[in-house]
Length: 169
Image (cartoon, rainbow, N blue to C red; front, side, top):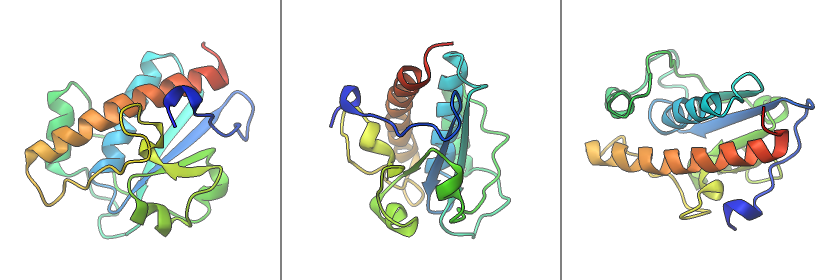
């Protein structure tokens, strides 16, 4: 499935949209995606209409800032990663958000599996739709840079899809 073919679920509230991003601990992948997608939406004039949040399926890091390597990778690319604090995914999020995007298949299973409103983040990736975002936590800096590349192009595709769905401001 390509980005052009991707249809996002309808907003629960007309004219507004809410996207939840989910990984394991909420200190690497989903917060990186949150920061980048939020920046893209702001640049597209959609920040006031689209809410983006991130969480982890595990609670080990709740309240902690983003992994230092993830934050440094974002900062080097011009993003502000200082506001992030890890939180844990709650089952109520499935009803509170228009779209829940998991970083890998394990995270997807942990939130109850795929549905109209629950997908893999990279289902919207124009280069490798349906792929997973690899967890860079146990690797080196290059893993964070690889995740940033995936996140940036997928965030661009999500922003374009949201512009089609909500209309340009």
